Image 1: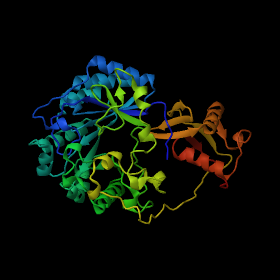
Image 2 (image 1 turned 90 degrees about the vertical axis):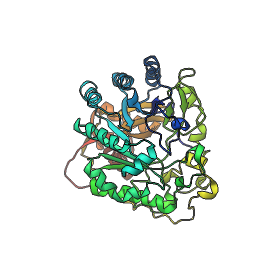
Image 3 (image 1 turned 60 degrees about the vertical axis):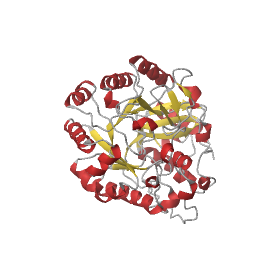
Image 4 (image 1 turned 180 degrees about the vertical axis):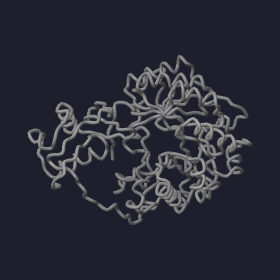
Length: 436
């Protein structure tokens, strides 16, 4: 198994500061036990150097994270301004407890914030939430931050890290999401922190994983909002690729198309790692990125995932769960029978329909061809597909018939055009006639 190697990451998670006003029990940062807001933080000069490196390597997206980025709003504002100026999209991860009307005003009026703010929500139960953050009143402050953000028109998502302590939150999550008009939900299975791997609260059973997947499906079906899981949900536990096809689309992208940059400049494939591959201020981004082959070649996956026939649609278990877990307490269900998605052929393309290229698409050339980004989805093109893409751009408006001198037009080619329309790469002007 080996993935495509990109010349540089497409996105990075940038730790603005290690300082945080919560001390969450499951936090992967061992320094979270401090009794006050502490930790390194980026300076304005360092932000400039990082953005310069991101532009140099054609990185498309930055997730602004921490610690808690709202502990240093002025630096966050400056970072957002610099990213905007360089055409780099961004999102914000925050517990929102420090959100104020003044901060929200700057984000809305001066920075024109349109992106999602992903809120860390340890539990939808007040007592549990305060217990997990180890800060009294944290739940109420999170809700206040959500309310301020919603009043300013921001899109708000919540990410809940599921452990044995809060798994029953799943029973009432829909009511919570409706009440606070949440736009997006992520439910992540906990990664046992390296300093507390004996804690059985961090070891979910197969039925717990299925419960998470079912909750995500129910939320999507009933509320119509996007759902996801930061940590992969192994297909050999879910057992139904048809039922859970929207949930299992999440696979580990660390070291494959994304990486993490700490506030001291250290670069990791995943924020849960304890050993960096380099430092952005010393070696630059690319040298560290090129050292992450173990992630790209799946050398650090669970032994049960090696050569598994479902790896292409599952992506395998979270590498850091595998690394930090105790083998006798954790295993995958390799012997389960998988129900595959039903193949539905529904091509609605005719030779006289006309198409144009979506100009909002980003393109980055790579040795294997190119990578495209449409909204926040990435698609990889071979050299042959890239040549076809360039021909389409030159034609500006075209039909399938116009492409016959460049490619063999057959049923497979109609499938390709249909796929390009579905992912938003092509705009279609439909001509009503017999379907091919």
